[in-house]
Picture 1: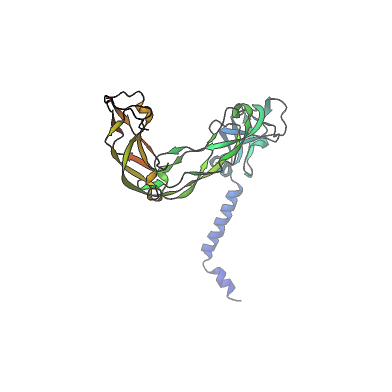
Picture 2 (picture 1 turned 90 degrees about the vertical axis):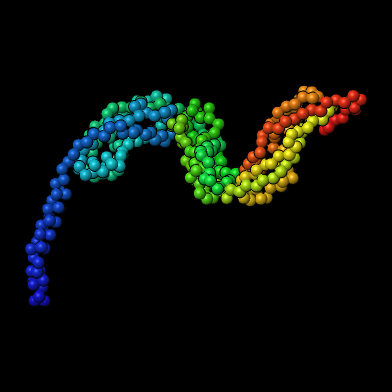
Amino acid sequence: MARLPNAFARNWRLKLSALGLSIFLWALVQTEPLSQETFSSVPVFVDIADTAWTTAGAPDPPTVELRLGGPAREIIRLAREGTSVLIPVTAVGSRDTIIAVQRDWVQLGQRPGVTVETVSPATLRVSFERAVTKTMPLAMRILGELPAGLALSNELELDPESVAVRGPESRLSGLDTIRLEPLDLGRVRDSDLFTLAVDTTGLAGATVVPSSAMVGVRVEPLVERDIEASIHADVRGPGPGVTVEPASIRLRLSGARTLVVAMDLSLVRVSVPAESLVAMVPGEERLVRLRIDGVPSLVTALPATEVVTVRRAVDQPGQVEQDPS
């Protein structure tokens, strides 16, 4: 026990300096200077407890200017994190109301010592409207293309497909769908689920539940396959037949591997549409665009040429007309 004084005495200058620094820092905190700062363009929000009503738009004006006082450190933190004014409305008395802004409506985030000194302007105009709730389907928007070497192997799957929208009756009456933020296919690298938020543009005063949806994207390696297909001429009615040049054409099929490999080629039909041959007289020649049927929606069929030459035969004397169809 006799050695304790020696332990305290060792490096006494260093220990005394540390004690003095601690006391200095404590005193500095206790005497932290107060500050006054002006916060401009602070947003104003309205929280309505009366479910039969909603706001017809943003308050007028939509922002206010605050004069805050308190410890400089807390003021700086609040400026960094931001603040707002939340107006509670328990019951709606009229469609247009002038509301005096109370200081305790300012969201200070429990900053000790920070006080609201002034709010400008001191009053706001808030317009209310009857609220309605509607169920609306979601609409997807697609941007860009998949990276090279990838293809969709299934249609995009949206969950949920509809949302509940609550807002001013006048604003919702003209809406039939709710748009999602666009899905950029250029960012897809593999099959995955993507979260898309609801696009709230034009939905001021309305709430959407849920506020986002999941989109399932299934992709596979892109493959190509070349096939030779005969060209059919869909002639209707009596009269001489027609000839098509060329009589067959090469098709390049491209898409997701499983879709292209599993295709039933017997269903693929290349034809000259009947409507393209209407009123075609014997001996006439036309350039006609081909139609391709029997190809799955996610598979692309690219013909070697899209236009062929169609000629109608000339009637022969004494020949009995036949209906080629």
